[in-house]
Image (cartoon, rainbow, N blue to C red; front, side, top):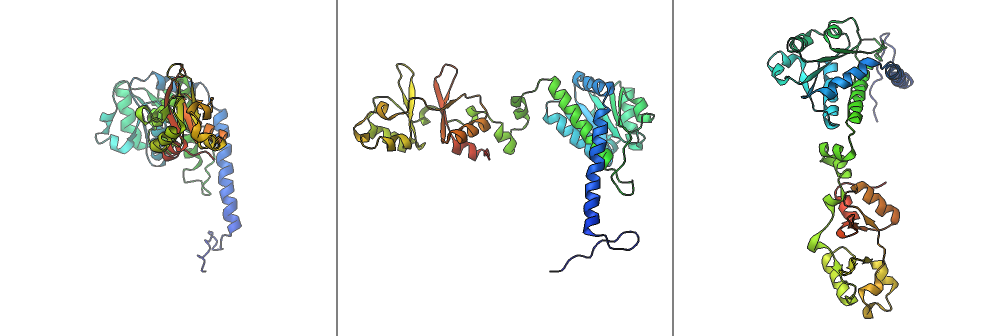
Length: 335
């Protein structure tokens, strides 16, 4: 097997694998230390920025250029996904018509480490001229951007992880962390719940895990419900026809219910063909509320080593049935 030639440093000497590993570890160390300092340096400006975001009647318009622009796009997505309306506005495109994306009630969150990025001039000027509050996220307290902003979050001085000190590395990592901090603070202030989060993530595995039991449960005529006096011969036909592998034994007079599983039938095999459903059923099946999370339901089934749950409402009325297969098809698995 052939190997690619080892990279060489400026002296022309090959760079060893050990050197590259050391550089990787050094990058993590530099950025981790910078994030720690940045977190410790959070002050009133951070709180003022959160209050501006919460007070906005429109959207948080996040902008930047270059690497800061990529981070700005990510921050806008994080804000939007956690309940704060937001959009990314490309700083260069803003000068060619996209300023129309920003309107009364909005807040501008502008990212620039130097605070002197020329491409931000038009969008910052637009905000100042139209009374749109600007939050600056910058590493330069004396910069034009910081002076123009209603609130300036100034990042502490930090060493870039780039060996030449040129490529934005530590500073952009810090910007992303500041954006996450703003989003989490706003989310907490709004008392956002997992149900709120689910509304913004209806697709994918994450959305599946946040679905409620009522979204997946079987209801109505699909349920394998029989009466307590049903002969087991007929009960077995219901179990087979409905396809759940169980039957719910429900007494309409008292609303009491039990469940018949394969295990129940095996335990009573000697009397099975001469019995009623009530004689075979387990009287206290494991139940769950329809508003419980699907992930919680799957975990409960895994812990109890069962394959289905009877879904009951606040009055302990049977309203549905949920199978482990339903959770798996929705993309929920318990490790």
